[in-house]
Image (tube, rainbow, N blue to C red; front, side):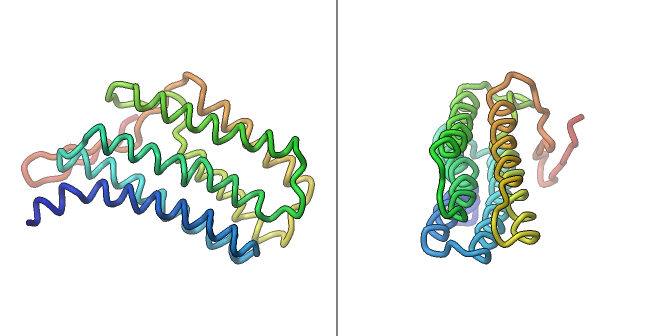
Length: 196
């Protein structure tokens, strides 16, 4: 029974990641306040932890599968591709068409990055900036701004647009990013190695 539970733990964490992304979007629809933005950002931080754990646990328990990989990508797209954009535009009274076009570039770059990752053979590096890192940066900037200003300034909007473009380019580019942690299971011991 315990082994069966452990087998499904990575995919359970992946689903929790997706649920958090959906909750963050729904929260922005129903609570477009400063406290709502802060809560959505903190929820996405929790999803980052789930996203880090699900892959490591899948490798450790040797339960990696194509289904898990696809679920993880869908969850990452919702939570780190769509949710940060929704959180951003939810605090704007009016969203000009050119801002909408720019913010749409980010999730499109993210889904391209995830599709390419799904086709990549298992390796010790990523190609392009992972969408989890991009989403973490996006919501961190939003969270910091929410503690400084109650509303967006045009300086912040321009900065956020530029950040979205830079992160989009980094996600679709071909540079390699080494995995931070590599988890191996040997008997009952967990060995964590920092990859440099």
